[in-house]
Amino acid sequence: MDYTQLDHYRQVIETILGEYASLSYSYADIQSEVVFDRNRDRYLWMDLGWDGDRRIHGCLVHIDLIDGKIWIQRDGTEEGIAADLERAGIPKEHIVLGFRPPELRPYTGYAVA
Image (cartoon, rainbow, N blue to C red; front, side, top):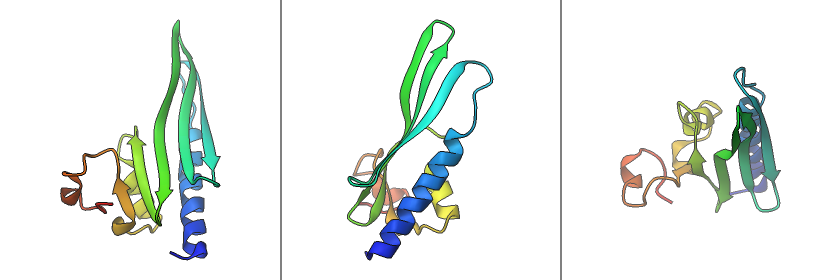
């Protein structure tokens, strides 16, 4: 994979996660934030705050770029972040559902590894 395509993938991931994180919660004091580590190609969407007396702190989406492919390690979205990546023009064969067991990945329609 050339640097231009890798940089494009980084930009797409950052844009999609930024759009998700910009949505606010109306029922609790919860903030969304994104963590972009371009040196290690790790991208996170996190929620933190309070829902009444319950502490909220968790990763909703975790994506890594590994060997030119987008590995979705955690997906807490309703529709699936892979659908957003596809709509942005990322081919299915460049998306790995890393949160699925390796033996089930061939049946997902996405890359195996």
